[in-house]
Amino acid sequence: MIRDSKTRRDFLGTMAGGASLAGCRSPTSADSELHAGPADVTLRIGPVLMDIAKGHTISTVGYNGQVPGPLIRLKEGVPVTVDLFNDTNAAELVHWHGQIVPAAVDGAAEERSLVVPAQAHIRYRLTPQPAGARFVHTHVMPMSDTSRGTYTGQFAFVYIEPKSNPGQYDQEVFLATHEWEPFFGAEEMEEGGEDLGPKPPDVKPDEKPNGWEIGYQRFTINGKCLGFGEPVRVKQGQRVLFHILNASATENIKLALPGHRFTVVALDGNPVPHPRAVDVLELGTAERISATVEMNNPGVWVLGTPMDDDRKNGMGIVVEYAGRGGEPRWIKPAKSLWDYTAFGEAQTAPNPAETIPLVFGKINGGTGHFNHWTVNGKEFHEGDAPRALVKGRRYRLIFDNHTDDAHPVHLHRNSFELVSVNGKPTGGVLKDVVLVKGFRKVEADVTPAMDGLTLFHCHQQLHMDYGFKLLFNMT
Ligand SMILES: [Cu+2]
Image (cartoon, rainbow, N blue to C red; front, side, top):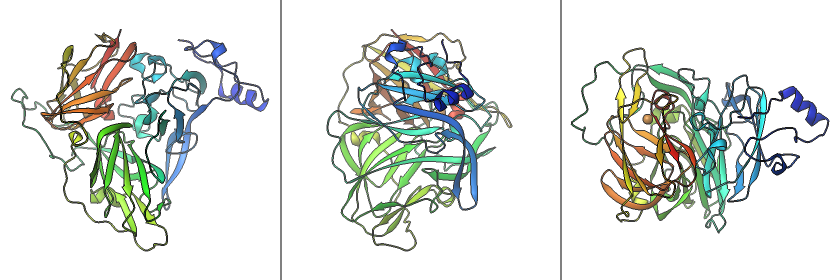
């Protein structure tokens, strides 16, 4: 692996002199392809102080001095030059989540992607695809160090403009949720026990007590606690297209906007066969939902989580109609069940070439330790031989959750098509993360698109760090 060994001082010196960045080397393209001059996309990883609420400032790491990082708008299929600068003292990985890109630039250590060394710079080319709401985030493994990895502010929206018309709306709003000030405790700190399937008979009683669970003290949308940032300003009669990203390290969330309904038009950036209106959105970690809202109920409203404590601690944003004032209103939504299949075709998928069962298991860590996670009875270890898949073949992945936790599982460098959710057949719903609830089963078909190492993992940072991974090699 070739890395640019320039120091930050060297780089700044070069910039001050007005010279180009041609001295930076890329290991993925010939130097001649990497035109001199400024890159199309520049991400500078560095410390950020962010005011999330009145008198409450958080010290974290972000992109370009802000959290979330800048909205990155790209055009499908149009290559861009990317500059990554790392102003921190630790090596970083920048993952282009939801894009079908070569392993070298995907940003995952297991795929042997390029690393951005501490206090250094790398440059490469990237051809954005597919269209829709994607994002970029760090892929380092923080383990017990919650000052690193996805606990930080290293996330930004990537919106890839489709080649054809994206649909009609009057205003586009990007919202990213995140939690702050994490702590470890013995208790599950979420509303639990919801929508569990029947316990599979082979799940044995736990030998040890449950290990650490994680909780947070503050919650933000676009880096601000509810009521602290600018409201989303709308006008009566507008159709607003929301792109919502769950940029949490570990939490699955729900969001509602009282007095309004969300018409879900895309999941993980991919248009759904049947857009449908719902009252409550649910997003596993790293999932995206694009939904339109008809602004036909003038007032000042809270778009937020139905979980009262989390909303009081910040998980919400005010939606304000022009000419309206006063306290924002919140009305608790009726209980609703999120169902991916509601947006899909009622159909049975063509038979796959091969079926790959992936059984998720948990090994309780015991008090004061972390739980460990297994796929097909095995924790992932660095150096594990990848499982070979053939490019262009249709595989059916069976996500079979033998734990009572919900797992937002993610496949890198591919989209998969949901074919069955908790026994209900569906089709046409393309995703890169799917939330598999406790003791539930989801089946998804994937036809590997590109050569190379491809990581599968749970996007819950603690699960991923403690075993919940599997490596494929597409050939
Ligand atoms: Cu998980």
